[in-house]
Amino acid sequence: MARNKETAGARGAYAQLLPELLQLYPGLMRSHPTWRLGYRDVGHLAHGWYLRCHRGVEAILTLDRAGYAEEASPIRRSVIEHVLALKWLAVEGDTILDTVARAHARGATAIADAVSAAGWTSIDPAEIEHVVAGIDPHNRDPSNDHLIHFAQRLSQYGDEHTRPGYLAECARTHPSYESAVCYVELPSGSLLLESRDAQWQVPFSTTHILEALLALRQAFDPAPWRAELDRIVESYLAVTDEVRRQDGLPPVDWSTGKVSPGVSTE
Image (cartoon, rainbow, N blue to C red; front, side, top):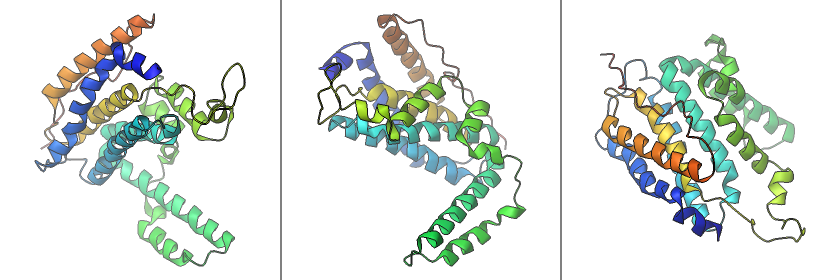
């Protein structure tokens, strides 16, 4: 099976790195860390967005073990989006709050409009309007509203390696040729009851949790995990280079594969 080939080759070494990465944030939370000055208003966002990555990866791995890796595409897309959001937060800190708040107000207003159009009685649009009024979007800075959109955020805070995987997951998530053809045997055209060749999810999970942690650590003072991530990044790059060598590819070009020392602002 393809799974046995994955775990027996160079890719199998990712499975040694992932458990180490997944224990870092829960361990940090037990020590009650301090948010860095300039990040304290968005600490709840940093925490929640990281957990979307962390628990998203755990969900992907659970589905993978049950034979549903292909069906995890919406979660992989979410993980990619939340990793990018953490990179944005790591660079800008508290200044993202107005943009996130205005996006929340915009989304809530769209829900209220949809509820009214559908004639639902189980949800009171006035309650949603009250939430929007509390956000007070008109008195918040609109200058970065373009960063509500993934494409704009990616162009400013991501890199060219994010887009191909993201677009592939979008194609699998939405009704499309890609979302259907995985249940068809090629070239015979025979119809299948499960995906014909789902990919092992540990390499994806390892890569994105590592990127999430590298971004998240910038929000704390002091920035945690320097020694641990130095060692893990070195191992990760070595494993990835060996995987790429076996696949006939050049060494990895990963712009975020560096652990910065962190900055204290106290």
